[in-house]
Structures are given as C-alpha cells and as structure tokens.
Amino acid sequence: MDTIGRICTKCKRWKKSKRFHQRSNGVLQTRCKRCLSKEYKDPKKWAQAAWFRIYHRLQNKNGNNPSYEKFELRIGRREFEQWCAVTYAEWVAKNPDDKPSVDRKDPHGHYERGNLQILSMVENGRKRLFNKNLWAPPGKSWCRKCSRFRSAKLFGRHPHSMNGLAYNCKLCVSEINRLEHLKRKNRR
Image 1 (cartoon, helix red, strand yellow):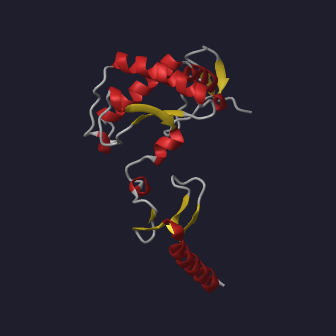
Image 2: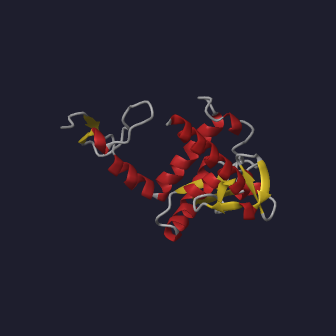
Image 3: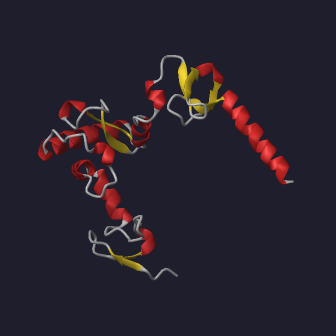
C-alpha cells in the first residue's frame, strides 16, 4: 500500500505519490497530475508556462542550454502571452490529440513575434538543427553510419523519421547485420 504522498498546492488535498509527476531528481511535483492537466488546458496558463520555459532556457543559469546563449527574447511577456493564448486555443481546436510546442520558424532567428509558431512536440523535435535530413538536397537522405548524403532510393522506410526513410542506407544496414551475425556466431 502506498502511504507516501503529499498535499497538492492547488486543490489542497492529500494524495498518494502515484498521483504526482516525479522530477528527475526524485522529488514529487507540488501539484497533482489532475490539477496540472486542468491548468494546461487553459490557454492563458499554457502561455505563461511557455514564456517561462523559453525565458529560463535563454537565461541558461543551470548550464543545460549553451546552444541558446546566442538567441535573444525580442518580445515582451504580455505581448507573447496574448499571442500565445490565442494561437494555442486555435491550434488545440485543430489538433486535439497532439501536444503543442512553441517553435521558431527560422531556427537561426531570435524569439520575436514574426518568427514564432505553435507546432506539435513531435514536429518540433524533427526540426532540430542537427537533423541533417531537414537540409538534405532533393532526392537525397543522410546516412548516419557512412555520414553522407545518398540517394533516397538506397533507404528503407521508417514511419517515425522526418522524411519517412530509415536512418541508415541499405548498404550500411546490410553491413551492420553481417557484423551482428558474426558476433552471434562467434559466441556459440
């Protein structure tokens, strides 16, 4: 029986620990999962949380986001929250099953009014600068194993990748499988 728990700072009720998200350091969140889910459905609350995530990412006080040091926040908090609340509400109405994320249209640009949009978390993750397939020449895809662009015809399919193709070309996959087979054969 789970007797470990805490009082939610929002609803002021004692709840078991499984009713709270756990942070990476093992500490339970101060608000229960139910209160958090209600809060994030409110566009104003979501906009405030998005502002603080961006603000703290750019501050980089904990050293976890050194790649963001060159970017600036060129939009005021109130202006951002107004834009975000309206855009968030519209986005959620169109995409009820996806999780939203604030994104910069130009990944080299700053956080400013004309450069912001709301995307799904998955889509935003696919847009990262290190994803070479985002910048691939037409008809080409990046092979992670041989570290070069190759014809898209040389790749198998992968439904979760950005371009729908496998991460390694068929030649490299064949080589990987051959080496794995030899390893297994030598263990016997």
